[in-house]
Amino acid sequence: MNYKAGQTAEGKVTGIQPYGAFVSLDKDTSGLIHISEISDGYVRDITNFVNVGDTVKVKIIDFDSQNNQARLSLKALNRSRTRIRKRPMTRRSSAPVMKLGFSSIEKAMPRWIRDSEEMLKGSK
Image (cartoon, rainbow, N blue to C red; front, side, top):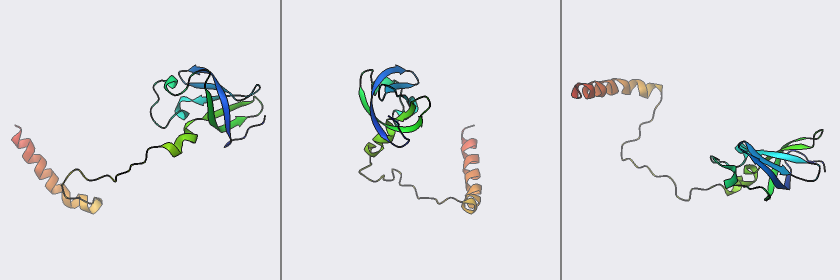
């Protein structure tokens, strides 16, 4: 079968290495899910996500038709499942909000220097 980038396919995990998982898409076509394409989060151990013999649905990132090899992604299909924050973030500090820019930094710098000098004098 001839695959194209952007297409989704189903295959069987045939091998796992520290850098990724090998997948057989059909009898003539294989591919690699690089460790960076397993999940959006940090992947310490690929076997926490897939194991040899698993059937996986993958997205084809790139396809080399001369060698019948594909670059595959699991995370490209799972992006819709990423966690959505249900509550808006609230400020934890009651400190006033300071808008920064070059002019506001210029105005605040003398106070920051004075505060730092006083703190250094107190620690001696």
